Length: 318
Image 1 (cartoon, rainbow, N blue to C red):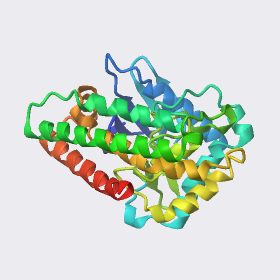
Image 2: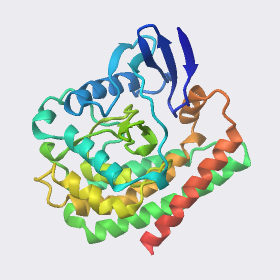
Image 3: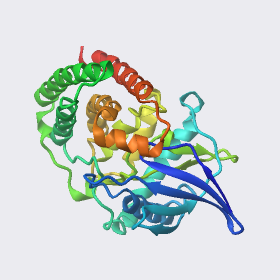
């Protein structure tokens, strides 16, 4: 038996384990006393469902040990995907995977899946959840220069949040408070994007990491897909991706409009997520996943990501 470390994610440790029976991936999930997120159960349950409705897109689950926070998965050979490598075919594969998860008959078998960890079922709720994120950032304890800068950003984020809230409320009051009906909700991979994917030697895309998956708003999923930090997807694919997703939700004629409304909202959310490393529980997850983390380098990198996203928001609000 040989055991090798894989590149770390943000929430877990992954090992490549080679045995006489084959090669496997072992994931060790982060556990924190005050953290209520059940990452192992959420991911494994989602993978079991996804493997039924969309075979060969996600890794199979062979076994789980909830007590020790371990799961045995299929090991997928592949390489990381870069933004500049993305093609229309890649975008289509992602959209088709999402549609397979949300095929009407398949969804009937998904009632056991939880509400996604960051789920919101109205425009108003999306904005309120961002306000909660901003208020948490305003509680950062400044111990170094980078902490002071993150606090400064939280004040800027709050001003942007107020502008967004006012603008959307004033122009889209009809759907601002509207909650999605059960049949309009989706099974979302959450944190869905090509940062959580590998390209196989055959050229197909396999998607990974579903620790936050569950029921959510399909418009929010679309907006999130185009606001990921690590491997950004060009907005030139927005119409193509959304058009495929729309076909899975015939009872939502306003899906595209809602996705466009939520796009700047999700940009602001990801500004906040970029600065999560300044909060103790999120930093603890990062340090669990990577014990050799350079704290100052990490904080500076996340500040830079937040600043870039914020600059793109300024054009939307002007």
